[in-house]
Length: 179
Image (cartoon, rainbow, N blue to C red):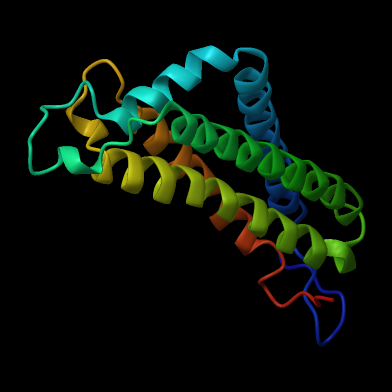
C-alpha cells in the first residue's frame, strides 16, 4: 500500500518510525544500565580495565609488552573516561528517544530525532569498535587473555548499535521532508 500525502513528499512508514523509536530506547536503556553498573559497582570493571591495560594476562610477548600501561593512576583515568563516555552516550540516546515520541505522530519532526540518534549510536560504535575492539583487542592484545577478554561483548554491542543505526537511517529517507 502506497501512502500519498503531496506530490513532493511521501510520508514515512509509521512501523519503521516506531521501530527506530523502540530500538533507540533499547540502546539508551542498555547504555544507561552499563554506566550505572560501572558507577555503582566501580571495582569490578576497574579490575577489567586494569588487567587489559597492564597486559598481565596476555602471552607476554616482549615485542608487544612495551604497550602495557602499568600505572594504576593512568588505568583509573582511562576507566573514568570510559564511564563518562557511557554516561554521555546514554543521555544523548535518552534525549533522542524523547525526540522520537512526537515524531511518531508528526513526521515533520523526524530529522532532529534521527540526527541525535545517529550521534548517540556513533558514540556506541566508537566506544566498542575503536575503544574495545581496536585499542583493547588489538593494541593491548586483549584477545590473548582468557580471563579478561571482552571482545565478544564488544562485538555484540557494536553490531547491535550498527543495526539500530541502519534502521534509524532508513526512517524518512523515502522522500519525506526533513528540517
